[in-house]
Image 1 (spheres, rainbow, N blue to C red):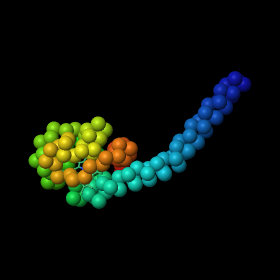
Image 2 (cartoon, protein in one colour):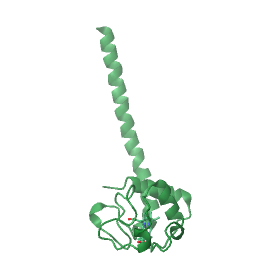
Image 3 (spheres, protein in one colour):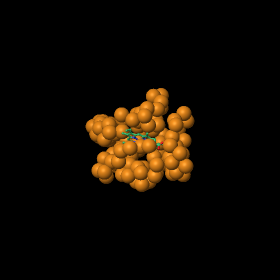
Image 4 (tube, helix red, strand yellow):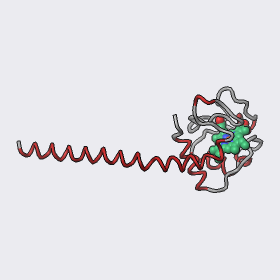
Length: 131
Ligand code: HEC
């Protein structure tokens, strides 16, 4: 019985630790998320990521990871983007953001992001955008 209680105690302690860990993680994540948002600021003039906000100059990027290029409903893509055959993942996004015209010759997306760290942050942001 004592052994049993001891085990329960250990389990409770582990549980409490686990919870605190999650809590700490969440409070750490807030500045990190803000950093990712800042990285995305260079995209936000042309792209929204909240599903309910629709398209801007560029298509809405909600759920873009895993999506086929040029397929967000209701956005008038260039033929180049529609016919690119790309599926967006970390690798294809990185190549596109580094040099849009090379990855998708004829795309209407004008700006390249030369800083690899910024591309990484933007891709992480797109992997889990708000809502
Ligand atoms: C000046 C406006 C502008 C900026 C800034 C911009 N984009 Fe774009 N983006 C576009 C346009 C326009 C398209 C559509 C391109 C086409 O149809 O060829 C596009 C397309 C895309 C696509 C393809 C989406 C799909 O549905 O296939 C992705 C991904 C993308 N942009 C990501 C980004 C990211 C990330 C940034 C910031 C680093 C960024 N864009 C900055 C205008 C912009």
